[in-house]
Image (cartoon, rainbow, N blue to C red; front, side, top):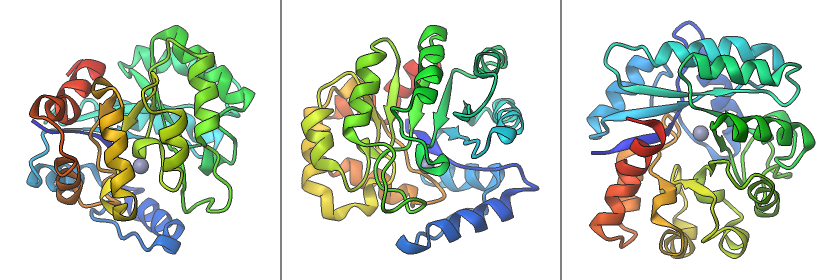
Length: 269
Ligand SMILES: [Zn+2]
């Protein structure tokens, strides 16, 4: 069983525009989308790679969008195939964070995604701290983008130091750093975060051949209960992502946890 913890799709009417805008953002690393951005095409693509379910990470890139993004997140959870689970989103400038988090919980959503680079706010900013306290209190997990992102190539808003502060201030929060703690900062991740109570998702590792050896060290140094397999579809080929994780030399028991069991436990699959 393979569960994909990190995918992106959009409401059908917005998908072409959303995918085009994100492709333009990713221009400097020439990432090409592998789906048309709709949930139907995403499910088809992932199933053909042998993936049996997916967790969609939605992001409100401005405070006004929060409600619509969260409505879409809730709607995906009722797609009849049962393929999708989703995270909600709370923008750091959202004026009523507590209400938004409570309504996500009421809608059956168990966590949120934040993307500090998109909104140009560092992960250890007091506005995020308020969101993380509310999630910790409510028993909701948080997934964050981490490391390099083409939207802000010269300034990383989620550094190993920033994430260390978050997990120290919120010891009960399930805090997941995407991309194994982030591209282009693997030395800091190994030094400050490996072996801590942070969680990682594996998404986009297949495009990091240049960091293969250090990623392998990280896979072996971190608690195997705290790593989720993810692809970042449509930005990576799910088959290559599976193959890369398979090539890390992990035992079959650890791979079962990473590919399925850890996500099943967190998301109550
Ligand atoms: Zn992503």
